[in-house]
Length: 350
Image (tube, rainbow, N blue to C red; front, side, top):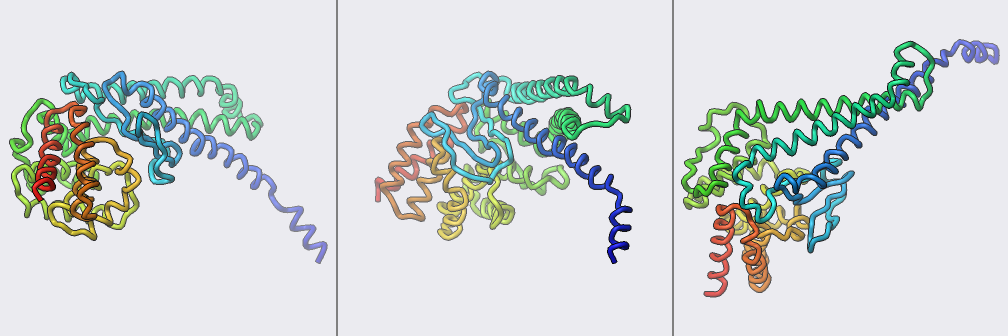
């Protein structure tokens, strides 16, 4: 028995576990460390430079932690409910000239960040080139060397991939439904009234198989348009479709505005307290720390219709009205002001 065991141990190919360890060193560098650093650099660039392009950061996530600005300080509100590193960029308050170059400034911000990342990645690649040359020559290389090769090539890969994704979005997706949304948004930014946009049901638009993300973006604008025309049956149909997309799914902060709409819709229009409460609970830490007027308006309707708390609603209305003038675009100011004053009048006359 001992002789058989000795023979088996002698014939084991120990190079296989060694290769696995070396492969793991490369994989950790390429997929883990490079991915984290590449995404962190995107976030860092936006935090530093977005204001120079006319943007502000509404919230950002860092390794699963979500931060939102409250009382001029960043406050942590979530754990593990967002992309590893991500920021939501919106037009700066009081940026009255922003409307002149809306899409142009967005592209400048994105592409300047992408090529900055590429430059940093190439520098890292150059600094580790000795290990890469050693590897290509077939020479023995340490685990740290393999890690550095994986890391440097991963940085270049992710940087090029980000540029490719951005190019695809602006040159492919923006020719579809996203581009249509963008064009209508630019009309609003230039002062067009939302009721004059002549929006159609999504199935009547000439865009085949739009993604769920595109649908949610369009439905936000479409519901506001329908609300301006008091077309409540159409609003119900679209809002229920939005509900189907988001109901009982993990919170995705990319779609925070969709949750805001659904809380407002079920509080004010359909008056389904249970649904309004369910959507509120999903996004409660976020919306309750959001200091902007649209959040205050949604909360005011929620607390008045669902919570039966008129005093809380009145306080939120005043907070919302106080922040109205911060919005850069007239259409936003008018939309929020009208809804806030409508509820204020109802409460005062009751």
